[in-house]
Image (cartoon, rainbow, N blue to C red; front, side, top):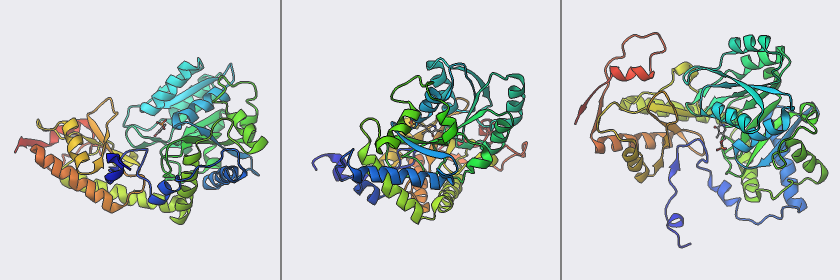
Length: 402
Ligand SMILES: *Cc1c(COP(=O)(O)O)cnc(C)c1O
């Protein structure tokens, strides 16, 4: 234990994953598990069952939960690489970086696709999708991001799903940063494939992702896969054959995940976790408002996972210096990813409680003060009702040097 890292207390992570995890989750990894031994495979089987039950579905009603090595991106790519037929075509609904990442995957796999974009502060549009599907019968799949972690916006996966189902297409939902923190009704949304990962709202550590899908939809993909390691159907057949991952499993992250699932259950499941994240998010918003910092999204589309804040309009504000000062106080913020405005992000998922959010707000206030960034907030002018936090809202704030 000679490294600096082991001597110091870990910084608290206000990021969208990897996250701050509980001590028992970290301790669960202090074991060497035999990857083909019945003991480890029993844990994998139990985890697959628990994922189905968290999703509110079951194998008896036609669902499977399939863990796959790699980060969340690998899971989304596996769905496209496995699930889209050679003549298939995908519509991607995009309003942020993760929607655009799906487009990149499709381009790499040379899968035909169209993109239906809305701006980064505007939810995906089910009406526009309906029109597109009426016009284009060659579309086989519709893909959407539930919580667009780029901004923190939550897209209406239920309304979109009703349109997809009415047109009889296959529905793919990237719920990476929302599964475990938002109740999702798989049947009502008409979901065929949902992808999430170990290191987001289940509060495990990185190492694998998982896909929850309709068994018959996946079974029909036999022979389509464009990738060996990302072949979801073969991955499922591997579990069915001998209970094992096809290739080296992420043993330590599976052990951590087993503990993380137990903690989720004892917190009251998804409802309990959602309540804590909402309390975290409220505490963050109130604190930041007191400092005069404004969030980017209109409140009606802002979710309780992660929040984008506009840079203070002040000549002394400098993101790298601000980040460094807050980090030195023990808190890691997350850079912005929005193309339309200068922002930084604060996540409130992971083993965090309202007190942690109060602490990071205090550190942010101190860092701004040290930098001489003074924010004077003026009363908000009346706007179109969605005014708070829009990029152009910067002009309402009067700033001056200290
Ligand atoms: C985190 C995330 C992903 C996957 O990112 P990885 O870095 O590959 O884990 C995909 N989509 C969304 C919406 C995410 O938040």
